[in-house]
Length: 64
Image (cartoon, rainbow, N blue to C red; front, side):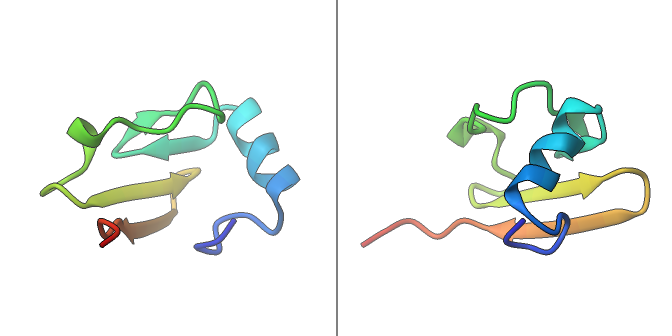
């Protein structure tokens, strides 16, 4: 939702439930599980996708 792929949290949950959410081109099957640090691209990036044509990238910056 925060990167603009879904209009609301419930919309994001619906996308996951319907099988249209992907993280690093892997289908998300549980919307409550956070990806482990080992799945971050180059140690700090996640590529998100809703459906086939709605990509977004998120940079995770360590706190501190």
